[in-house]
Amino acid sequence: MAGNNQEAKVTFKAFNKDFNKALVEMRQESTRLKAEMKLEQEQLKANGTEAEKLQSRIKYLESAHQVAARRVAETAAQVERAKTVFGENSEEVRRLESQLINARTEEQRFTNALRTTNEQLADATDETKKAAAALQSDFSQAISEIDRESARFRAELQLQEQQLRENGSETDRLRARINYLDSAHQNATRKVNETNNALQRARSIYGQNANEVRVLERQLLEARTAEQRFANDLREANAELLEQANVARRAGQAVSETGEKLKDVGANMSATVTPAVIGVGIAAGDVAAEVDGATANIKNSLGVTREEAEKLTDSAREIYNRGFGESLEEVEDALIRTKQNLKGLKDEDLSEKTIQAQVLGKTFESDVNEVTRAGNNIMKGFGDSADKAFDLMAYGAQNGLNFSNEMFDNLSEYAPLWAKMGYSSEEYFNTLISGSEAGVYNLDYINDVMKEFQIRVKDGSKSTDTAMGQLSKGTQQVWKDFLAGKGTVKDVNDAVLGELKGMDDQVAANNIGVGLYGKLMKLCRSKIAELSGKAKGLIPRLIRTED
Image 1: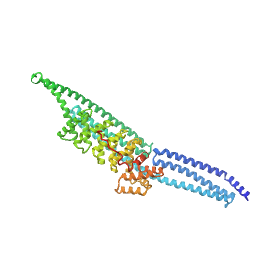
Image 2: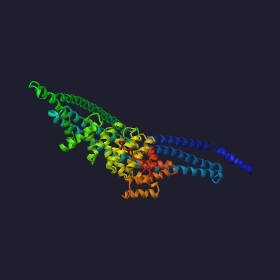
Image 3: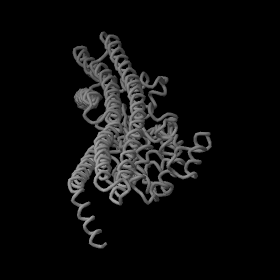
Image 4: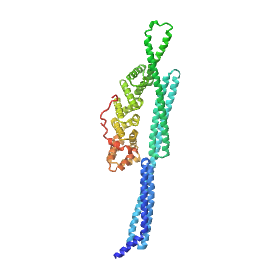
């Protein structure tokens, strides 16, 4: 009997030889397909869109399903052959029928996965269309507004040039041009920022190599070229104004010396000398006109009375005499910018804040306009005093926040947003400092990841619902309370990051994070998570700007 069993095994093995060889080849093909899919998914992690990742998975599932179907067909055929050779109720047939069930189960699993992934792709395509439409609308609106501002600035300059054509001095005309270039440069910087933000969003929506991305890359290059052109023109115009001021100062010193000598002449002057003295008086009048021009510029720029303008001119002269500023005109412009940008600043604090803005600007290669705009937005957003705003900026700059020469622009743009999200100014600065110390490429990374989060947690999208649905009921309740007006974005962020940081499966945590924060989350999540709920009090002391 044992000999008969052994003979049956040998016969069945020989019967299955070609069949088993085909199964081995199919398993090898399945392994290769899976390896190719994993490689493609890794390549798409950095710059691929969600749709591209799903398409890659669908391609794999279709090929794998075909292999599974072939396995089913081969096994079914082998069952029929076995029935003929060994009998319908033989042990050999039962073993092959068991293999056939397994093969059909695997085929069905691929069918189900393929259907599910196709549904996900349809949803992702719909989300992509919505995101693309939102991007186009937001970007077009922002650029249209910037272009309207640029046109208005040019029209205002043309009007001023016409008004100054007959009676304006060269200095007046130069100042008008500098004011225009300054405004135009700020506008050009806005255009660069808006285009860059649109480019990052487009890469996320369309993928790195999409035509829409290439168009925005070209537009960003053009915007940066225009920004640099305005910066160069502004620098040249300021240098020309400085040279005019130096010439006027030297002329003033010469007139002062001549005036001292004239005191001794007195009644001895003859009628023939009088015309020459009158000529010197006219030159002295030009120097007096410099101060009058400063007063008039302050009066026209700030819309104050003549008396108030004279007081501000005295303040500018005092600042200049204390050694701050290359010229009286530079100090005058700094004072005007400080008063214009720091809304609600008391007159007695104006000189101090003008000096602080000049020192910060000179030290960290920015100008007074950028510094004071940033200070005003900190004050306005967080409700801080001017002293605290300048203390924070000085502390931040001293601790590396200006590593990419964009600190003041970033503060101007994002400080109000972080305040609305429920953060204090200290928490905001500590988050930025932590990111810069950790090697984040630029401050935009940290600011943009939180900007994206505060959009997504209230956008009602399916992707947000799906990501939130994978978190605990406690975190979901914090989110629901926020949507009901009972919390802040900070509350939701603290809850989400606290949970993501504590998850055992950090791959799943990262996927949830990308769903809520966007792709930059990969670079910033760990840095922001470290600060979640801990930022308050991390600045041990604020360093006063004048120190």
